[in-house]
Image: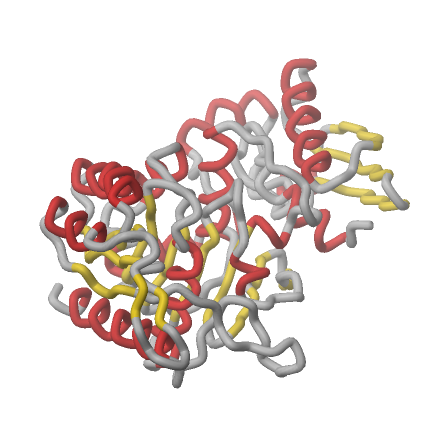
Length: 370
């Protein structure tokens, strides 16, 4: 069963049609009642025509169904004069509608956080991309983020792979984000501030959204999350060149990319598309990471190139960038009894942990050339 805080997080992206601000931030979703699989609530809106109500109801039902709630009792009403004044809109519905075209399209509590996207904020955005799934892109993203934090950097990590979110599980995160004063607080793990769709979706529930909804949620991760001061923001993109990757390129023109591939020629060929998309949208490719480059025998230390050789180097040459690292095939030697257990984070003093530390050092050097 959802808590009230989780329900607010699910509904936060829904904006009042006239003001363009989050209904949750306006406190215009009232009388929330949660009983087992049933939710009741009241929605306040400046416009009360049938079309507006229908669109709001469809979006609310859709988001609740994504969270596992199918039984919804919904009521609508107009705001009182006092509620209008609290919202800073002591005007009639018609007057408010006329002013809406000039109103900012952010969400109340999140307006200040939009500064993280401003190039003047000093935040270095690094998107981790791949041409196809299954090459270890998310593993590279989480370990690079942790490696940067180990070097003393202030790091955020957005699990932008909204269909295939996996970062919370990979990092061993078992807590949900807190909400303070209507603002989402990211979960911190290994010194990295983390935000993921996985925090708001019930386990194994599929996300069935079209592109515009994905972009809207991604914007919420920037606008309605209290990131604080950051040096680096790592974005774990979905594989391929779909809507989310394009949204990131449009939202963050100053972002850079790291392309992840395996040594296999076909994987490298497909990954070239992601790199080409970055270059066409004038985004710098910091380099290529070749994951699963080889298997090293723990006893004799012989290297077996299970997936072939040379794919990463050829991809880097094609994209006119550097091969940042070749990471061996393997899994972290972590035990569930450890207090800081995570399935996918390599310890700093392991061979792979050392490689990620070198990648982080190289990334910092490249970013500081600005």
